[in-house]
Length: 107
Length: 122
Image (cartoon, rainbow over all chains, first blue to last red; front, side, top):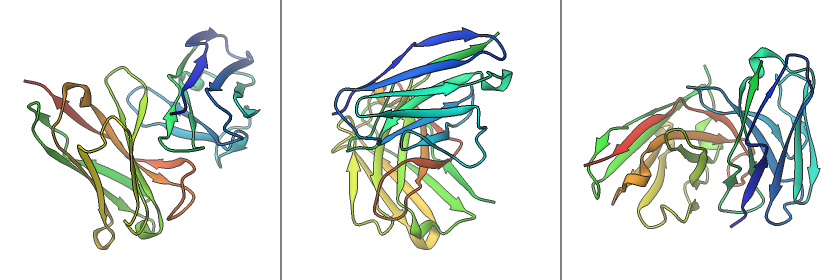
């Protein structure tokens, strides 16, 4: 199975800050990496697919990049509504696996 | 309205069985592969099962292989998860999710239901 890790596990930042979350895969997965945002009590929401493709309706302050084993999700100019947990997920092969999540707190 | 609505979650005894349902509306259900994803209380996301749009191919997480079975009825726009030999570690919110890339591929989960809670406890 492909094991996904994320760093940091949590962070606290101020409105307007630039925030970067890193996701690493235990083996190369090309660009088969997705990012989801989950707010408390809600289902996850797809933000970015295939490492860097922003989903329709997702604010442009979100961006993703990476290839192989290391990927990043960046939020430029952090907003209060970005308080959430962010998960990466690989779709290179079954079983599909998620990272443990990064909890973002906006001060 | 494009949506997925799960039902069937309950409190069950260990080793018992339970069937979850997910009804789709607002889109052509028969054109999409579907997934089940679960989330234990306060924990992360775990992919559980996947089924092609025509129901002819399935994949399962190792943790549920042989105990859970995914199926669908395209005439009812419904997805099911039959769970047997339930364990305490199966306690979670179970989400159904639509596969974005179509009927026989896997890429990402672009539409999620609100989830249904399964609690396995004696």
